[in-house]
Image (tube, rainbow over all chains, first blue to last red; front, side):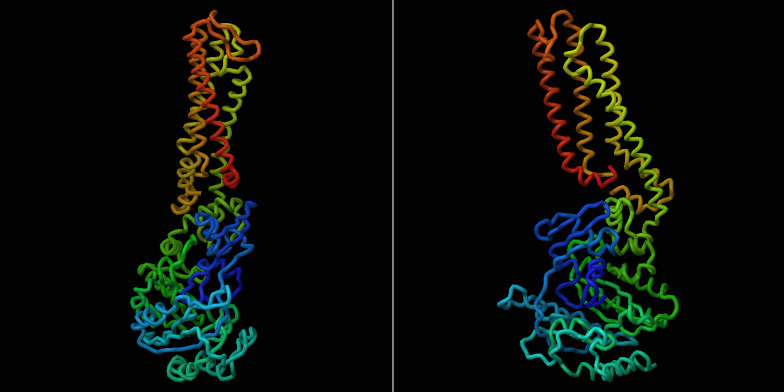
Length: 452
Length: 90
């Protein structure tokens, strides 16, 4: 997860950045507008429609529920920020973070503009150094009134704004066999020796480091994975991470840690509590499934989760269900609002392959046809009853008509009872559950169809 | 699947069943009092000679009218949900 990216992707993945007070993107969305395949347009205002479910459905849906047309997000002023760093044993990092970052990341007051200034600690992350990942470097960008040491508003996109010095350091760290040691003892102390003052946007747009923002879309040899663990489980997961990387000889170039407060409202929350996000950037070599799954299982066992965007193909369905308990509700909403099953992605296709959906559709169609037939016979009888004004008897002309009317009443009553029974038994649900199970559809999908 | 209208559907069917019972009771009343009531050619309520039978008829007629209003209310409530429920294969 990065601080820069396309807005649509960021909403779809409910991405996060380095701002310790913000967390998942959903936390800063005020309003949103989304188009559903069922022609529904959902306009939702967070503070006006707190109970409105649509808002909760879209961020983090990986574009499988709706097309997001507009989002209105909370901004902060593009103020000045100054970089400060500190190196410490990794196990001391949570205490350092709590004292120096979390306590200071409250919003500052300051004036003149309706746009709030950034928090005192505007951006923060920590780097864990290879090979044992037992030493952490905290990198914070603090809000300041000091004059800028670099005037540029943004890092140029094409060059990432790196100097030749940073380029050389980056190349050495990435490609030399002793790159990890070089980074920890030489490159980083040199790189972080200075404490530049830049605009917030500049710091966000790629000027933070020289190996920290490897972008898998532009570096085909690298990939990233991310694991989220509750803040009090930092030490336990760090130890497992270091052991797994060593045991499987993972060519991990970079491990960074970012903080995220719990998120409010998304259907597939990755930050169920306040979490530390461990982002592992590694050079692709071999199949990462084994070691990734080991880390995924450990994160889940510690009450955390993992990044669906980067590990969708690696994680098993059981792991997805364990890390994201809202999956069943998410699928139920998917079936309800994308009822033509138009929006697909790897997540949806993995959780609910088209053949399962089609099987459910067959069952559903059969149920609807049965219910419609019941209803049609009932409506026909009622029409007949109304024609002779049965309820008010104004049309009764002779005693001989009464038995016929009783027969008609009896038929109406029987049809009514059949309908009532169907509704009371929730025919569409009950029949479908048994029928779905008969077609070997997994339990979590049956529950999703049931809740739809 | 729970689309929010099932409670109203059940309520309507239950109320309708009560209407059927009342209609049956009215047929019983008409049969028991045969020859002692006259229909209204204009389509209005029949008039009974026996005031007790008349009161019973009107009580049942009123209950049917109230049941009709209740069903109207349930249908309006369903209409309010229907734009949502319509997306649910309805």
